[in-house]
Amino acid sequence: MDKIKLLNRKIVVGGVVAAFVIIIGIVGFSGSTIFDDVSGGSIFSPSEEPKEVLPLEIELEDISILEVTDKAATIEIKFQVSNPNVKSVILQMLKYKLYEDNIMIKFGQIGERPIGMLTTSNYFTILSERPTILKDKITIKNTGNIPELWSALTSNTPKWTVKGEAFFNLSSITAGGEKEITFEFSR
Image: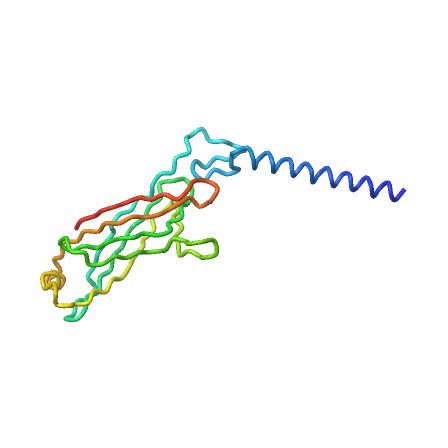
């Protein structure tokens, strides 16, 4: 009698496991995702809207000259990054070039792109509810080769131009690949 009860339990457990495997297989091979990072829908309540990832919105918040001496100058640059998508977006890296009167002063980056499977990334999660401020401090050494630049920095009258690009993707690796946007600002 105990053997019959044990055999019945094995059959029931085996049936439950088989049902789970079948459900996971159907969802996995159907080409749809359970949760949609773009439109906010799911397989249980699908969204009728097209699956389009909107690009991040990047604005130049501020460029400030913090300190100028005869030997060096310290500048702070701030970017405001906004996310128009329903779900969060991962900003991997923001690269920029800072120009003063068409002379490149600095090539910089905020964050980093992951390389390989085992490396970690210094990335930023950009939420849809509020913008994120990213800033970088730049130190420029006075070599004496560009006196016009040092004069503009000393008198606080530089003509800034910032050109760059940003690399981002959705918060899930299952929905969409890496995206890239470019930007340019003048002040």
